[in-house]
Image (tube, rainbow, N blue to C red):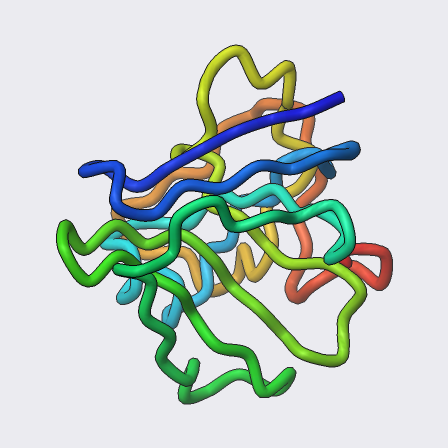
Length: 137
């Protein structure tokens, strides 16, 4: 199974040559500031993730991350693409950057207690957690 994705302008392209995790929607204040809204992300094992074109990819430290994570974005178009915590076995990928069809479903809303006051979480059957589930990598 191979999935592909890219930023808005196409300057950053990637493939995932393995399974993707179901989508976690993160409502934490840092993800909201990063993406402008709750951040929907899937994840792939590091060994399955391949950058095809990364000349415009830039990384910034995620300042409040307890996992010493960095966030990857396209320097050309500004697309928010990746969340990478070095100690984890996977890298998180913006679900909206994947080429369709993805076949993915939302499995959890994380940091739901930090959701913006205008963000009414849907009744979609997904779990709601105050933090990251232990198996979120």
